[in-house]
Amino acid sequence: MQLINRLDALAPAVSDLKTRGSLALVPTMGALHAGHLRLVEAARERADAVAVSIFVNPAQFGEGEDWDAYPRTLEADRAKLAAAGVNLLWAPSTDEVYGPGFATSVRVSGVSEGLDGASRPGHFDGVALVVAKLFNQIRPDVAFFGQKDFQQLAVIRRMARDLDFPVEIVGIPTVRDADGLALSSRNAYLSEEARANAVALPDALNAAAEAILGGANVGATLAEAKDGMRAAGFSLIDYLELRDGDSLAPLSAWQAGARLFVAARIEGTRLIDNIEVTPK
Ligand code: PAF
Image 1 (tube, rainbow, N blue to C red):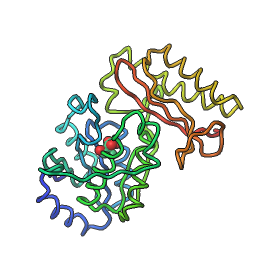
Image 2 (cartoon, protein in one colour; image 1 turned 120 degrees about the vertical axis):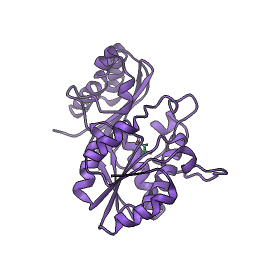
Image 3 (cartoon, protein in one colour; image 1 turned 45 degrees about the horizontal axis):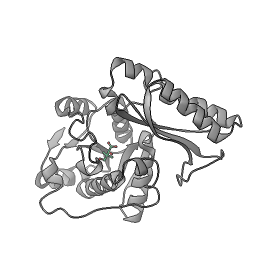
Image 4 (cartoon, rainbow, N blue to C red; image 1 turned 90 degrees about the horizontal axis):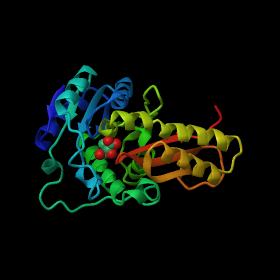
């Protein structure tokens, strides 16, 4: 596996990989866990060569968020990716990505609004910007993203379509720990006690989904689910909402394709999750 951190070295390496056939990209911010490795596995099954990027993108972190503290584990990540059969690791510095005088923004309206777009103003502008740059730098035929960040996936799909990037966007189902908590690099911030209590988040989603499918009132069900999360130690619930899985429009009653979305803090760590609300 080639590790590259300068743009001038990236272009020839990408051209070389593209001579082998199709090229897949898995964009990440590092601190890799089994969820990322599942994306890599899907990329390897699908394409002739796989590139992974590791870049903790300052443009998608708001003031007071955890950009400084975000786990940076490049050596361990590199070993995992080499063992997983990745061909190219693109791990640029901040200056390499956002050079002097950088002045461009990318904004995707509609799907960026509400949910994390409301709780983290500017977050999806930063995601869209860096992913657009990665698409230009790596020129992948196909790119893989986790469904855990479902709104991000919708934003990237819209951006790729609107800006005519010749790339297929693939969403991969969320990988979960045995108790149901979605894998996330931020789970590493949790104390043992908070980690044990964090299972209240997927539990609340699953119980609410079951109740909604059983015909319960959506508003009352979500209020009850929030109470359960607060009782388990979630101090701040940014949102718990039922939305359409395609348009992300808010729903007050179940319909096919509905999803539940949640973001909440436990011990100061913000966790997000979502599930489809569909009969099993
Ligand atoms: O999901 C992530 O890890 C990031 O938001 C992404 C897509 C790599 C962009 O920085």
